[in-house]
Length: 120
Image 1 (cartoon, rainbow, N blue to C red):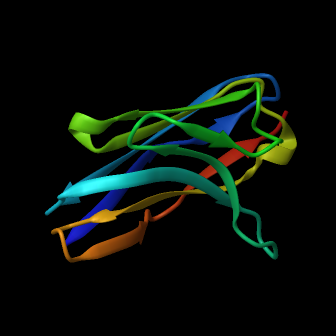
Image 2: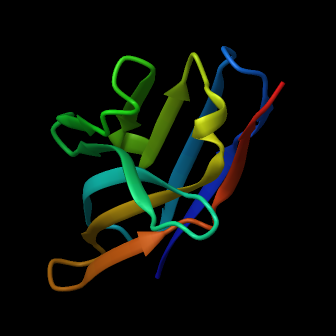
């Protein structure tokens, strides 16, 4: 069984920075992709950034130039560095991991979510 544990987030003023981390624990054969999503109440969950096992990244337009996703494969951990935060970045941020616990068993898991609030 694989679990994702998130940390980080909190309260920041506009223009400040916050960082998030998410680690996968359990029986893991490989993780193909790790990503960060966010969700506002009443809205759909949206992709913020994704990083694959080779280090390739994708970003939402709203995150480009401000957020950086990185991954430490040896620790099954993904990070999100968020700079120049804006009030519209306020949301619950969720980590996602897609991989295999064995060569036959796929997992597509979500973290518990962590609140990011940007307000003056």
